Length: 291
Image (cartoon, rainbow, N blue to C red; front, side):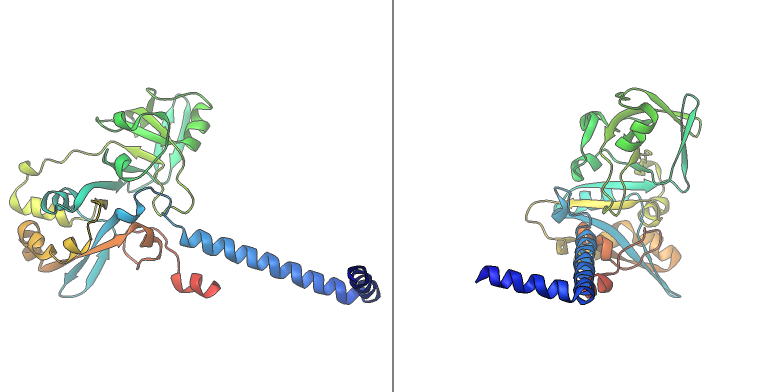
């Protein structure tokens, strides 16, 4: 019986070659389309989900509400992270990514390399984001001034297969000691953590009351917090008013503005709303329509 079916199918294909070829072509295109759509949708929906602590990481942003308009900034003041950790016991730790305002030029011997996305970061970045070290140790990385951690691709371009830890790289005519080499950030990471510098030190005690309050507002750093186990972000968002009155109201009164905290789960960041100073994001409606 089966041989009969095979023989019949074979005869139909041979007798109707053009129709059969057209059907096979259509079927092939359909499968390729399904594969492409599945790959694209899976890629878009997997943004930032590969970090070990992804479910407990939030990026902190804010709506600056003034009389004339409301502005939503992806970057906020450098004291926001330390302040949230100090005031809210739900916060395990924080880290800040302070972007350079332009491409940076790294130099080694007679070679120079332009880097488009680089940050000054807190050492706590390595505890919050599960970055894999190829050379060096996260315990020693960016714990002192004038240090740098680079990604695998850049290390390979400059040094080949050599371990570059301890070598000096020049950036804007200033020497930085390489303290580690990390795996490249995946393509589906909103922030590419590829070239990292020691943070600039800030001593709040040396600032006036107004200046200190301003450092909670002034857009300068992408700020992330890691919540403790079994903690909820609403413990912060629903009690932010007291934090605002304590730390931010002084400067808020000076510029006649309010600040509304925006806490975005890391895994939702790629599809979050538009903000100034942010990187391109995905279109959730378009992605789900493909499904």
